[in-house]
Every structure is written in structure tokens, then in C-alpha cells.
Length: 314
Image 1 (tube, one colour):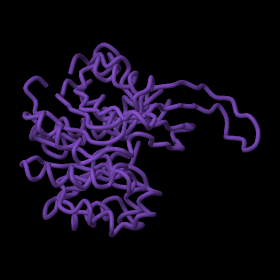
Image 2 (cartoon, helix red, strand yellow; image 1 turned 90 degrees about the vertical axis):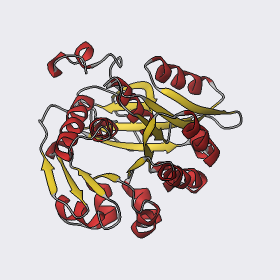
Image 3 (cartoon, helix red, strand yellow; image 1 turned 180 degrees about the horizontal axis):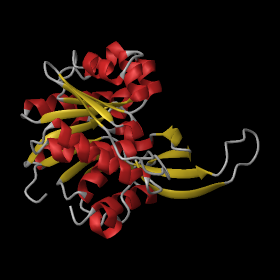
């Protein structure tokens, strides 16, 4: 992917405390699990997968002036992510507790320093990333009032510079809390909106993925509804609606799968690929993500290094 246009990812960096449960959660007692600390955050995960694909990527976020923040930045920078990240001295780096079992995950979220993201952080990153063509926004930034101004500014500023834009809808319950009409007004006319099945239902109501995606194109130019192992649907305003299937593989951990899907899709689409090609690469990275524990690529070493079944270096 040498010579590819830079993508700017705006959103969260966190430490994930990931517990892969060996049995259903027993409230009020003990549940056995494998537990590990790992890098997380929707925008940071997508940036990591883009870097793994050798796509130039700049991450815009805020961490605390603490050891977790320094560790999260060190691991991202070491593997090729350009981190336009501010250190906030009086707020800790965000932390998410992730409970994963049977392909599902539940998250307990302390966004920490991510709440301090400001429009000036976005402007600084846009100024420094002169080779950027696209801005990808995690909707967590929009869904919290403390960081909302930065998220809305990111979309407006990117469009003002001629960049295309995309938004990942992030999480169904916060979408329901702010209300679909309000959220859709915030993302009006973005070039691409990505939503999983729960998020699509929160935004477009019950129905088929085809119908939901097509309804969303009344607000955004293109909408993708992700259906996990059942593939994804892409609808374009005034154009065709297509469906992509995905290969089914055993799911070890679904954490970060949607972020990997977004990275694969954007890596292709920003370079001019058709929706079917973009969906195929998104689905392939999503399948890779569910085959490992954690939200990031193993080693960031390229396709062949960690996943020989995928056939060589990207």
C-alpha cells in the first residue's frame, strides 16, 4: 500500500482489561476467565489495523500524563501509527473493562482523558497531515457531551479541506440515549456511516439490513450495516445496495472486530475501490480479528508474519 493516501482517525485510546469468560458470568460470585491488559479504543484500534495494512494513518486523541498513556502511545508509534496525541496532566488515560464470551462482548467504560479532546487537537492534526485525504471519526467522540464539539468540528473541518469523511456509529445504547434523529443530524452528509446490527436498529428501526442501510442513505451518502459472521450490506444514495458474505471461522474474541472491518474497508475504498471490493477486505480483516484475543493485530507484522493462511505481505 505504499503511496496510499493518509487517513486521519479521531477518537479514543484506552487500556482494555479484557476478560475472556470460560463460563456465563455469575453475578455476586466468581467466574473463571483469561484476563489480559491490552491496547484498545475504537479509533486507536482502527489506526492500528490500518498501519498493519501499511496505510499511512494519523491518530488524534488524548491520553493522561501517566504510564498507561505512555505505554499505549509507545506501542502504536512503534508499529507505524503517527500519533497526534495530547497528554493531559490532570486526567488519567481511559480504561475499558471488556467481558467476552461466545462471540459477544460487554464493555464497562471510563473514557478518562478522551473526554478532553478539543477542536484545537483536530486542527493541529489536520495541519500536520498534509497528505491526508480522508477523516474517520469514532462516534464515541460525538456521543459524549464533553468531547462532542471536537467530533463535530472534525467532520466540518475535514470537509472544508476537501477530505472525505466516515463515522463509525460506535455503540447502540448511547445512540438510543441521544436519539437517532439528533445523531443523524450530527453526521448528515458524511460520505460513509458504519453501523453494526444493533446500532443500525437504534438508528433506523427494526427491519432487514438492506432496508436499514437504504434508510440511512437519506442522511449519509453511503451506509454499511455490519452483520458479523453473516457479512455486511452497503447502500449508496441513489445507487445500488449490495451484500457481501464472509467466511465463517471460529470466534476466539470479537473485541475490535468492527474496528478491523472499518480499517480494511477504508484501506480499499479511500483508494478508489468499489464497494464490493472494500467490503471484501473489511470482512477479511474482521475475520482475522475474531481469530485472536484482543482488539489489535498480532505483532502488527503484516499478513504473512502472523497469519500465513492469508497469503503473504499486504
